[in-house]
Image 1 (cartoon, rainbow, N blue to C red):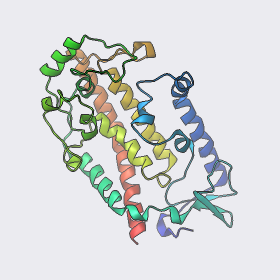
Image 2 (spheres, rainbow, N blue to C red):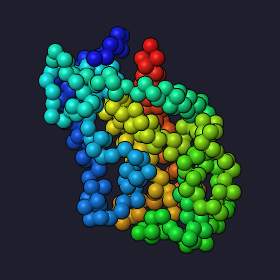
Image 3 (spheres, rainbow, N blue to C red):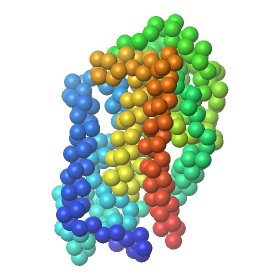
Length: 295
């Protein structure tokens, strides 16, 4: 079993079993629309993103874990994986051999990215135009089961009128070839930490990725809150897009108007504020994991 010293925390049986059940119920609630769409073999332009772009399967998302440094009092629960957990003398804990000792470089890279994201200047004038740049002069529309709010020419005019200032490497990867040269910044994977900033919707969505990358050592509490933030960001992302998703219950943010751009900035600021404590929590766990592995 792990020898955690001052990092050790013990959860009583009734506390962690209650958390386990609540976690499963909350995930099922959040993903209800997605599962219903799956049953109809239909695509959902908002929620699908959380399972297609992000590579974390539903089965793992719904499986509860206390995270690094936490021991569980009591007997084994049927929802705990015997692959990940072991029980000794009435104490359940994640298996020591599953610690990602080979991933110290990945830990270092992510720690640096999270720190730089917090310290880099925030950008509040992108207005979500990355989704417009993915449609700009496109031969094939990604979410073609949903109507566009504007004509192709109107979309082109807005993209060309408003300067593209996207700072997120992975968003820029999905630009049409014609839109790429119109972007002010040209981040690469190697330069990602230079550009990443905490007002970016995609940088805040990525907190979910940095949470599940270290599953099961990141607690399900943190993972769930990152998932909820990612879902919130994705809603705003697509509401500000050129797609008309009112048939799915998403009222557009008309960023082609001054009022719409003001609304987008307010949402951007709200999501930045929501992401800051999560980024700090993830950073603390990543650093604790690194310290323990190298000890």
